[in-house]
Amino acid sequence: MLPSVSTSDQSGLKSTVSFPCPVGVRVELLVADIVFPDLTGFELDLGARERLQNLVTVFITGYVDTVATIRLPENATILEKPFSPEFLTYTVRRVLDERTRISA
Image (tube, rainbow, N blue to C red):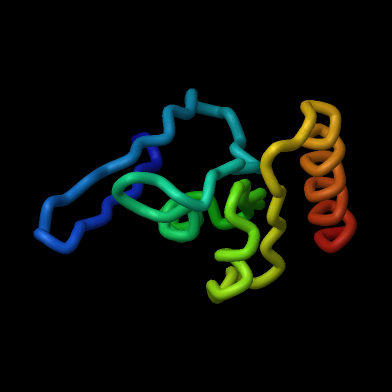
């Protein structure tokens, strides 16, 4: 079964986001924007963690000032837009290495 996240908007309309994942593939990282039309990156993260408990998430946003007013998930990593591919790679590597170090 594909991991999915469901959410309802103010009118009660339900949206579902699915994560295609081939059998046998271990998903370790989610890179998610904080703002989506029907849900937040935080909701996406929470829903994904229901099925992928060891998931690490890097949140991206162009609204860093707004993020300062939001209650962030514990140990949240925020990447401010715009960023270079090299900085994204560096951030992903750092987050995964940190998780590995803590797990060991």
